[in-house]
Length: 83
Image (cartoon, rainbow, N blue to C red):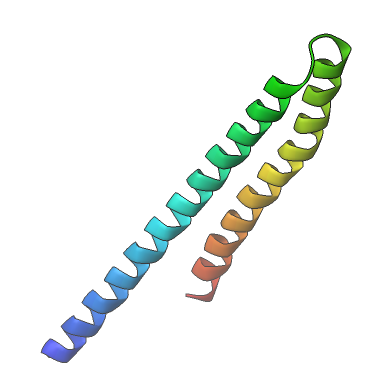
């Protein structure tokens, strides 16, 4: 009986670890990309160049963030579907 309890605790601990890793990697990636965008826009020259840099950053970073969120959601929904 204790073997089943130990196995259940191990599975719960494994799931908790996966959740923490997914959260921190996603959060860290989003913060890193945001900082990168701010730096790129900040180093652009004032005026039209800064406007172009902002347009370029948002045009490339927003699809990236959307892809990350979609990947994380797909992982969790696919995992729940198999269970």
